[in-house]
Amino acid sequence: MKTKLISLIAILMLTVAVANAQGPTRSGVSFAVLGGINLQNLTGTDFTGDKFENDMLIGYHVGVNAQIPIIPEFFFQPGLLFSTKGAKSTFGSLTSSYKLSYVELPLNFMYKGSLGEGFVMIGFGPYVGYGIGGKVVTKGGDATLDTPIEFSNTVEIGDPLTTTYFKAFDAGGNIFAGYEMAGGLFAQMNVQLGMIKINPEDKRFLNDETSIKNTGFGFSIGYRF
View 1 (cartoon, rainbow, N blue to C red):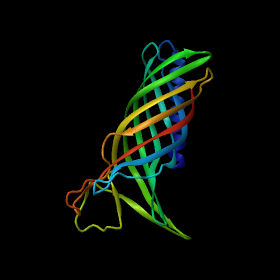
View 2 (cartoon, rainbow, N blue to C red):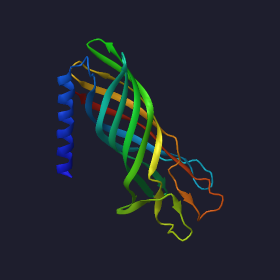
View 3 (cartoon, one colour):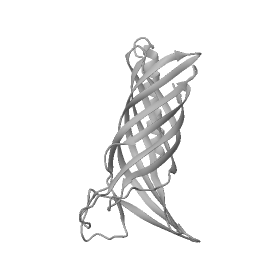
View 4 (cartoon, one colour):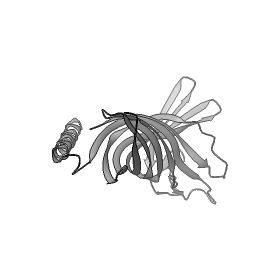
């Protein structure tokens, strides 16, 4: 894993060096590394149609993006992120944390205009994500139980009721705003709204009204070079 990460960083740095050698007037493409915190929730309704009353879960994200000019002050900004999401729920004396890990591909369009010695950034766009892991951590008193989350599009009648299932695929929209200093350091806040249900079809329940979506917001800091 470390070797792959070092190789990715080396390739990214080489690409940036080539782009800079071409000159900003010919290329204008830049790259950034970024990371930050997520405040995420799982919203929607349970199998009876009752609205979830979950609490937000603190997670994080880390990744890279590219900034590709379209017309003056407007850019296409694709990225690649590792992001953790989920929610907390309480039932009596038990508290359960649903922790999901995703690889995400945001495809944003951004306005970037001069403000002071830096640039103001406002953007929006879709994202797609794919779940690569997850678990449910249940605590009650001094006891803690960890159970893995399984990704599946369909839950069959004979599947255990004690297992938590989600679809691996997720998609939705991003809205963000931030500020980039002249040296390349930047900070931004973003809102993320899931557009599709991430709960699988569950054949164990008749008239199942479950609808679960990812939603939340986050804060990022990064460096563009």
